[in-house]
Length: 180
Image (cartoon, rainbow, N blue to C red):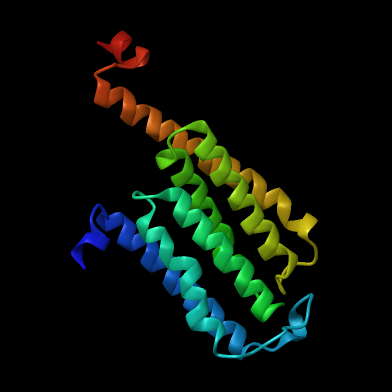
């Protein structure tokens, strides 16, 4: 049992816990909500949306071990959740989760092909979610937030990974050599 949690750091638990707690609160809000103020009527108010949403948020716990598996599971789970439950609000959790996944792809993705696959899967995840989100008028209205956010967080992850790699190999960045 301990092997499944090998390599997970405290910040990973915090991130997964926050995403999961936010997801549970959002799904409970969907169950209790009236759709009067939403652009689209809710498809369901079933309590089944709550536990099934955990399959979307929990995999980020293992982002350091295999980010492509995490992104794949999260994307497939999102597609299944959208198909099963239709129009409900998911954007409040899945947009930040997509940003966190984009950072993790930049940070832990490794080869450029892996990073490209990871980013493509994140974009699919966001497009599927936005296509049936009850709180969003149209997919096009949310893309100016989703796509630049994914790009910025991915870039931050790449930057951090480059810094870590330089530090690990003993290569000192030019700005630090000039300051010395």
